[in-house]
Image (cartoon, rainbow, N blue to C red; front, top):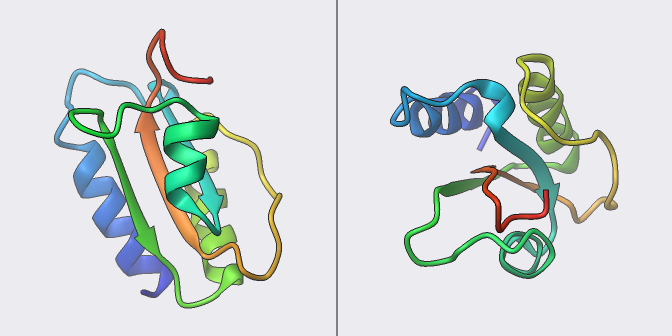
Length: 98
């Protein structure tokens, strides 16, 4: 997917939760999104509030991550390598890290 498609998809997902602020969301990029979400961040797989989208390139994934960070989502830029091409978001809870 290109950057605008991912931004649109993930924004549409986040907008399904009108009571949340952008700072309640975490954005990141991963090469193994399942491991990153469900092991590293401890997001609940079934019933958790998360979404992800594959980017065509690592550069696109990084630019989308920067977009959401610039709009107040929590997270940190960088990390990964050239295989890091999936962008993910989730709502932070008391059980997630962060």
